Image (cartoon, rainbow, N blue to C red):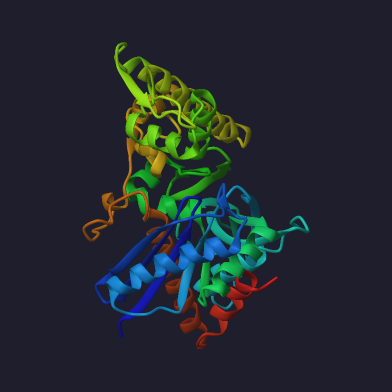
Length: 410
């Protein structure tokens, strides 16, 4: 029987909802909707009522297009309060079986989450980094392999309690139930990177409005995930200060006249800026706008590179032969690919969710990649759990237990 599945991504500037149907041929999008957000700063909800209104508008738009109502959603969790920590889980393989089963993988996830975390933090998601059997690492799919002990490095995503509580209140206010929570950085990589890029080594730079998420993949596994609290809004703020503009005008200047590389702007090009408080409009060099934007974007790229290096990783062509993929609303600034290649010294391309999936017209934009990736991850995990339940002859029990640590309310 076909099943309806929906997801939501509540970002700094927008909330995106995707509704689709999972059938024998895969997942097919039935409806999608987007709404402008207020009350959210750097991905963190600071005004529950305003964020709730954004969710309701996006949900209504998607439901109208899909011609159905949804009650349950898979929820992306992002923002500057989200961070990833590394954990290691170990479990013994049943001697009478002697081979790794789906149940063993499920146990690994359970044990890996039992790590000390700050008292003001909450575990929301995980991602498998590496499997090892009897000390042999680098195993991508351990199920069916012989051995006596299974281990795994697991990336555990934690978020501050207050940020998670506010998200829960928004969902409650909109009268929807979370089916699962998925870390937004991993969801973005799922939607944007091809299997070849994940295997060879690639990174996603998701430059949104409030934050920049960076995820590095190698051998089809995430190695590093970081969130930087600077992105498109930082560019807008710099334009406000540097050009003495209102927030609304600065946003318009960035979208209409923005360029990520100052020296690519002709010397004689000028733009007219509206006056404030009844003053006359004024004209400025377009190169000045480019200088402000380039400085902030360069800082974001350099900060990301430094953070990855501090964690023991590298941003170079040897580590990332498939390069970097830019996504997010801020990645649409002209010449940003050229700037990123100049600073990071690796190949760079722009990414859209339609690069790796067939999407309806109007959906192949940076607005929906996280919501799409969230559904893909949810479906894959659920299939693993269903296989495990079949092995154990149980229906629903393991799924419920695995969800308890994710869905528990604070």
